[in-house]
Image 1 (cartoon, helix red, strand yellow):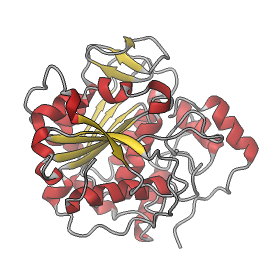
Image 2 (spheres, helix red, strand yellow; image 1 turned 60 degrees about the vertical axis):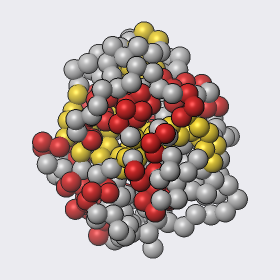
Image 3 (spheres, rainbow, N blue to C red; image 1 turned 180 degrees about the horizontal axis):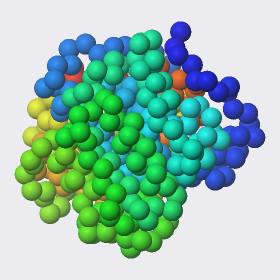
Length: 347
């Protein structure tokens, strides 16, 4: 049996509360997907080519995917989010400590990760020792406090060598995804939560995770952005849409394993139901992918009665095991990665 979260399943009143006010901390098909099994055949070279990133709720999703699947994922980039298991399966904790940083203690979260790994509910934490971690948290973020970003760095420090971890906390932006030249004004809150800050978040993430890269292309190639069917990866109840996006450079078409794999998790109200493909086309990843043989995967969360903002699950709306290998969304990420590793990943 998986290691369970300490809190009880929250009631409808709590669910409605998170729907009303937790937007910014920003998820099937007909068959259930089993929990991700421990990875086999993921040597250091393969794992180093598989990375994830996300913003706000997508940042929390990137963290829990990375920690739960540390045997598969070599690095993570996180914008405006907090540490693994922050909400502890309790929406009220998500709305308070994880958003404000007040009373957010890292030691119990580190202990939970160690215990979950010992129980086999997440990958061995030893797998984090080779990870590269890039964290961005604006001092001007009025939604998820900068203290949450510092707590995320503190969570990773017992597991990740100091020279592999970067915390950027001195660039002032509104809560959202900073870009070189796309989106609203840098300090403008709202809209698509994509902000023109003359700051290349995608490039900073990818260069830290993969090392020196070839300069980004001025423009991505529209023909390389394709709609993809993710129903074979994410099972019933995951709230991940059947249709998502993949950016696949021509050099990666014959065999995805000729290229690296990066999975990008949008924030709340940034999925296709809200802003069409603007996060996908404006985040900046595709231009780097084109010149550096990277496949970028953009799964999309569907809105629902209990998730009207289309947020990734970082507090437990899909199941009690949401941040373990058995969690519906995490298991889907593992299945997608396994398809890449086996050479079967395709749009």
